[in-house]
Image (cartoon, rainbow, N blue to C red; front, side, top):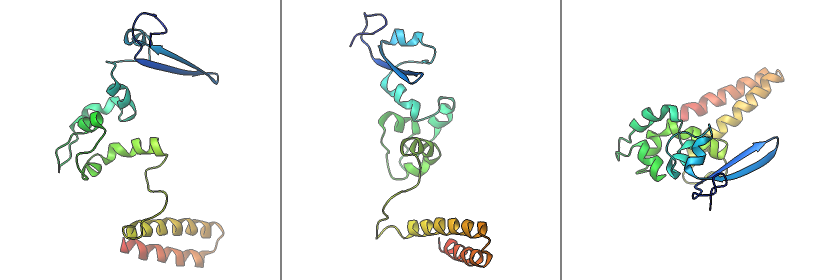
Amino acid sequence: MICDECGANNAKIRLTKIVNGKMIERNLCEQCAKKHSQFHGPFSLQNIMSGWLSDFHKQETIQKLQCEKCGMTYDEFKQSGKFGCSHCYGSFKKNLSPLIRSIHGHDSHRGKIPEKAGSELKQKKEIEKLKHQLSEAIETEAYEKAAEIRDKIKELEKEV
């Protein structure tokens, strides 16, 4: 595909702008894309995709993050898009939560709970449900019911 701006180079970047509800798409080469103020730095697929993986201002501290189990760094994860082991989730959790929220809209499990492996998750869901009921009971000034719900919540939180 040829660059829409210069008409000479191979277009590697698709620029999409929405102005007053109207979408404008342009295919640009690297040189023409650099002329637009919103683009900075070297252009590669990895750099463009990493925009939603991390905040560029925090990149130095993120690159230093490393999984204590397998030794994979956050920078290596960004390049491959795959974790080295199951412990990487915990090691990179602080940086993964915003990423997961931006993709899925939330960072907690939504949906069916597995029968065998979901006892802790079921308890957490039950606590959330009870907290919602507690706030409703307080709003309706049903204080005796609220006290009962509060006690149930305390019991469940001890188990978790």
